[in-house]
Image (cartoon, rainbow, N blue to C red; front, side):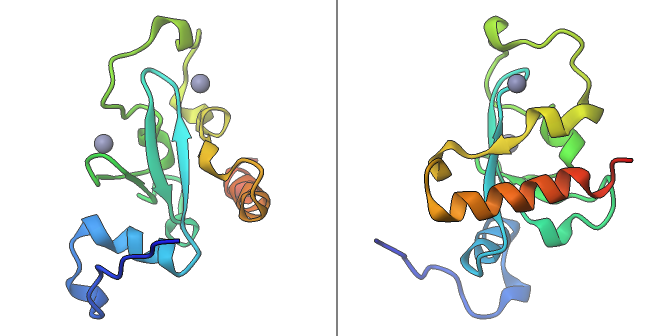
Length: 125
Ligand SMILES: [Zn+2]
Ligand SMILES: [Zn+2]
């Protein structure tokens, strides 16, 4: 397993590109993806999800920070008609965001699945 140590020690000076990647190194952030209105992969940092519209997901392609609702509307690919959802509603982001398939059948995947579910329930009544 290759773990390149490319992140400087002083976290406060890190550009956005690296800050979440560093959170991931500490084991708290994990990768999620959606396939709605296109497709996008991001890094979800549960500790940043302090309110419903808090930016807590970083796009792995442009490194922009998104809230859960804006993330499901964000994509770098043009929409695939076949995966288009009738009645798409970003407020239902919890129906669209799922764990990255790279964690499928891994021990950490089970843990992340639980955390992701907790996050989805956090602000829903
Ligand atoms: Zn979908
Ligand atoms: Zn992006």
